[in-house]
Image (cartoon, one colour):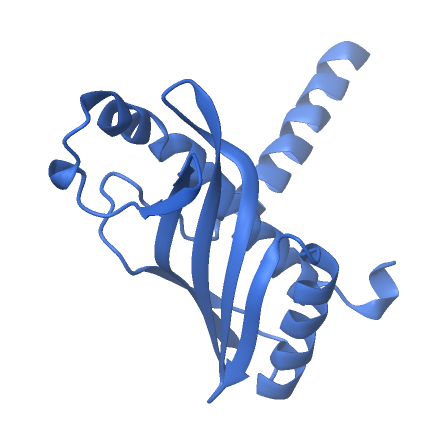
Length: 171
């Protein structure tokens, strides 16, 4: 009997923690049309608090080598960053270069992926319309990378949301 009770309690706690992440909208990488964006409600933060939280998150999340550029103008953060060895293209690990815009308003932010590129030897090539890629191996590798990219950006958004939602009392 106690075994069943503990199993039920475990299932309830697991479902509760999973349901919190389901509340965030997902990025859909069924195609490579950009921009892709999601709007996230943050009930307890005004615009100034959001700006400070996002700036602190940028400082803590990115390193000097991963953050290429970061600007803030007209209620929008523009970020260009690199994630090393995220993709696999022609049996080589490849870096992902991406550009994000995080726009803020009272109690909400919009995370937009405006462009992504993969590193092919020494140059970055944009990922956009796969029909324009003539190399079938690269095209298939990029198609196979859709779930990796979706997970990467979903995790990034979840980390940002968790950072914004946390308070100084949470530490």
